[in-house]
Image (cartoon, rainbow, N blue to C red; front, side):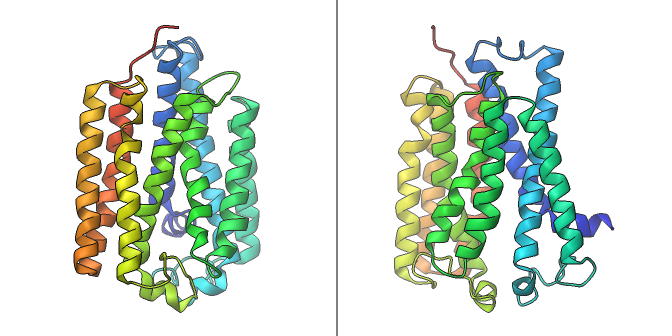
Length: 298
């Protein structure tokens, strides 16, 4: 298989973003526990486990994307942006894609499960939700975006849980999940607005009202508004300093401004600007949380 085909099969850029999110959350978890979970940030053990997370997370995400393409192979043939993927283009059979997806899923789950049981279970749940619930819902109802936002926000949760030997979901884990969960809606609706014509060829209904109209834009703006206070949760609960608070507020207001421009114009150009803004938003906010993390005295 050519590398170009493999990268299309696993949706490389999406898989990289997901893995990056999990890896940052992992390091936040180590700092949150005073560097005593997997050793310290200077511990060889900690970095070995970080590598396990990155490789395992990459494989699990790649597997979920692979299963998604096996299920949607006939629909992918209908859309311009997907018709050149290896399965719809005939360069790979669905049987080969299924075997490859199973192999990556098993290997990735094993690596994540070796960190702790909860991390392994969450990785399996993310595959099931994304590939076998969200995927078929895409043609039935816009509620698919809500369902997809759950596994879409799992990387932050999985990374944090993986950063602890015994794996637990605490307040910081929920904050990380909440930020990525709310961000998902604005991010995905911007993409759906840009690609709506292509999506309709496959019968996908992903915008809030199913079409590019003012109501869809209003709902997108509302979620961008909700993201403003949610992004400030690290500072509000005392886990982040004023730097992360300031940067998160600035990024959220810029994101809201971009969403408002979409509402004002209803143009694809503004939706594309919002889409690219979403690509920058999450890594910047997560990195600032990491660098400006405040450990509470226990």
